[in-house]
Image (cartoon, rainbow, N blue to C red; front, side, top):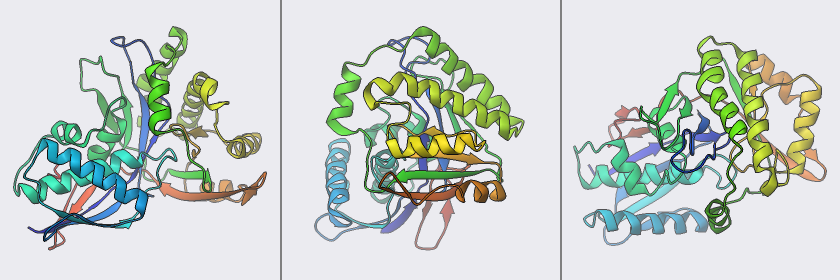
Length: 328
């Protein structure tokens, strides 16, 4: 085997629970994998040196990642990586985690054909899941994800199936990004502790109301719960991002849609993107018709997608498709 292709979805995260280290639900939360946008990467053995067919910022990420991977596994050969589809960085979609694990899976599969390393080993090699485990679990399992936090004695992340009719509109201002990199790391290094009452309500929403309404396929109840979760988490993070929703244009749209009766609007991660759930295609079209192309001088970009209820996929030259969880 000399080449393979990995396709991922995107990860939405509706807010970390920040209790004290070692306490229940520390770094817990809820998230969702959606079908698009996502990474589509083709990875092959290279003759002599790493070669990247990608934009400059992605090439830099790939170069750093391969250096780190070879510190774990020095026999990883030179690779040629072609980016066929991009998941935008720093927009609340989990771009870094999905790319890192995709490339790690590909590198391991090409280096050690037939090996089946555990997901935890792949995640460790990729350098992800420093805080939340939603993006890494989502890569392998998909679905709606409940992260019980670092102190959980049971499996940390539970994946639940999302009704196939439900739709999700992803909306963001063009050419804007959320907090990331050194700024994000510095904030977490000196982070304030979330009030106990806030953490308890978020934990109840995460482990009870959201799973229960999802399993009943109660869209109205689920949308109400995810909006409550997003608003409460956003209220805690407002001290650093200036508001429950970080970007002013997204605040305007959220307010207008809520005034029109839309429920479930929540920001993903640091934004600036927000997620707007819909019960089916007709509901999604009704919502989309109420989203302006420009708000306060900011051009908006939105995408209609559905939940990804399985992990990322890998395809070999013979087009043998393997679901996430058995990628490498």
